[in-house]
Length: 416
Image (cartoon, rainbow, N blue to C red; front, side, top):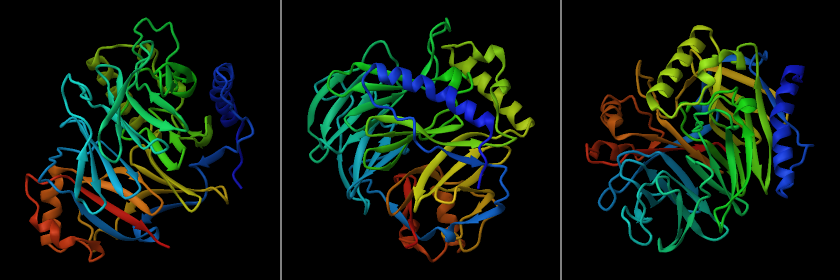
């Protein structure tokens, strides 16, 4: 049994109280009796290596058709029914593919006409209405498309009082995340999460004060995903230097899991000058690199990422001098940490050096990763040199890839 330390409880209370106050004022029910999981990274359940074969049985290479859609990168992916929905910020588009890799359609195009957007920053799926939302960040607008046909159904202007970087849909609302403080005066609180009316685009509530929940950090931090879907109308949210994963479920927002340990970075690790908001990207980048170097020198652990859940076990990564892979058993409330992983599903002989695939998302049957275009030649080399395992489905098709091929998706299927 993991003991909950007083410091962790205090962090939870400080983070939780603003949510209750702001949410009740706007008529949303927030319950305070949720069971908060505590992942103790100093627990005795620690080992050095996690083998993929302990969790997955096969891996499939999904070769994306490039005859009608050429993708430079995959910045985000969502899975809905039998389709994969992909965001490519470089080509400025959201694309639908079958799970086999066959292209289906693209949602909207760049332009100034009806149903067109100036930028394509993010997207979300409303499975209740059968719609897909494309977020035009430059215009602060969300375009709605029919998810099956791709036809444009209308647009929504987002409340001008807020700045969003990423969006998701949950239980009749849009939730938007702000990744850095744009208020250079620094007098107003900086909130990480906003709840938005799906029809009017008006702000309903603002959640998670960065001073309490993001250790006072005001600048953008390296990240991939921010929202992680667990199941229908249940999403997890974690951003920047948060040490607590929040859950969005049926109009409620509550703490889901917090990490603790002697090496977890604290608010004191952020310098005073780094707490002053700046809109200058060079200053923000310089501050981030300085913080990373300081955290590494102090052997601190920070940033929760790559979150997925299977059979009541939560898996995620934490950064430090090395990337820690964490396994949390929700029933036994036990934490297992690994300083390295062994991908013995993809490889039959592990290379000394290789580029790790990028985490995309997970569904009820497995986890999706991506190999970018720039690393396809490396993958082909591993196939030619017989490093790749026979468990890789579609292994032979990799030899036909070239510099014009789309990125590859690796789908790891869970064991029964």
